[in-house]
Length: 162
Picture 1 (cartoon, rainbow, N blue to C red):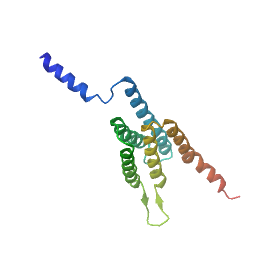
Picture 2: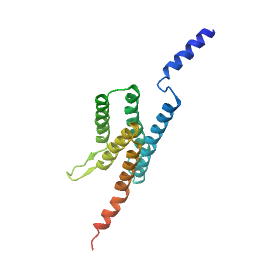
Picture 3: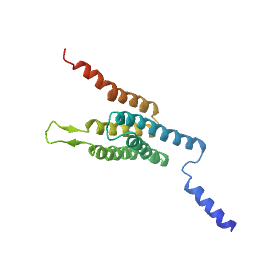
């Protein structure tokens, strides 16, 4: 019986061997949590603005994008292969964003473009975090929040009739 349990434990250890040490595990946790938090901030802004794609959607997009680049990075893929992974993420998220765009009867009546762009940017932020570019991802998130939240207020003030 001990032999069977030893076999099971050895198999489990081998299955979870992609995190060989505490440093790798910490890096994975920090990056995934940061991607989710940054995506959640953008989603929170969208949700409080009454948009359909909110906190959960943006968190999942950022988390998924980070994971899509972290796993090949852990496997040691080449830069050329990583470039193809990123291209796939960008294209896939483009399809997700396209689903948020609604065109009305009038050619001028198009809704969801900002949401689509926000989802696309959220994926880019997730990719940045996944590749270890945390500072760039945080700065991009802050700029996006300024663009989404404060820029419309400034534009509306400029466009008021005098």
